[in-house]
Image (cartoon, rainbow, N blue to C red; front, side):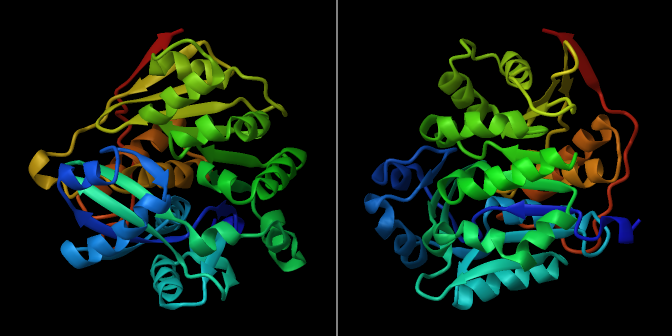
Amino acid sequence: MSQDLNGALVGFCNPLLDISAVVDDNLLEQYNLKANDAILASAEHVPLFQTLIDSYDAKFLPGGAGQNTLRGAQLLLPADSAVFIGAVGDDENAKRLQGAASKAGLRTNYMVNSEKPTGTCALLITGANRSMVANLSAAETFQFAHTQKPENWAIVEKARYYYITGFFFTVSPDTIEAVAKHALENNKTFTMNISAPFVPTFYKGLVEKSLPYIDILFGNETEAASLSEAFGLGTTDIKAIAKKIADQPKEGSKPRLVVFTQGSEHTIVASSDSDEVRIYDVTPVAKEEIGDSNGAGDAFVAAFLAQHIQGQSLDACVEAGHWLGGEVVRQIGPNYPTGELKFIASGDFTAAIEKI
């Protein structure tokens, strides 16, 4: 199967070096941050990055949601299955990101901007929560022209599965549109992640434009709520939101899957070709085993996609996502366990099915 999956998965997002630290609620209040949110840095957040380095036990970790997901997927796929595309600076942080990707066997296709530093993301950990503040820098200079270069578009053409985060709406919506249309025209699978509550709030038009092309949409409960509000769905029930989004108009013949995680609570899956909504139990991680929750959602998507690409059932995809998400929760930061990763489906998926 290795040769069949060579370059099969391509992902786009903003590669960032995470600056992670355990902090108290006072620091969140000082910078007007919420305990479990993801935002782009504004002028008031500029000092935060140095504060973490100077006043806390900060750790530097390879980050960026899409790159985290592609790293995890590659760990569960045959060699050379996945390629990640994004923009970095010409600096040591870019080398750190490249090194982390290489360690996971992930191929990268970076656009290098020598005039901007590699982007960073402050991760403020309070208990099991994390607040993310991204300073995109070089990442936000990604150009559609990079995607269009023949040698880079050849990577897109070779792939059969695509994963793009909602964060990329802030950077290159033209790339999202081009890849989505290519997937549709060639009967390939196009997937996206809402990624953060601000995405449907501030980029509603772009989300609406992309949704008809999305075969699988991922998100968490806060992102689902934001999507519901932006689209005027009139409900806060996560199951109902999932089904309503699944049933939005869609191009092509494939049904749309909507997958909403809720941390240690149930994972919700709705499809446009069924009136039923699946509800999957999550086996909670013991409190004493938790490092922090950062990267758990990315890991869920990584394992889900890895199984989906290999033709596994929906049940197995969700179980794999729960398993890898749980493994990452046991780490500090968006790190995967060391050593060989291998998922074996249990066959006992404890999924309930409800009609909407």
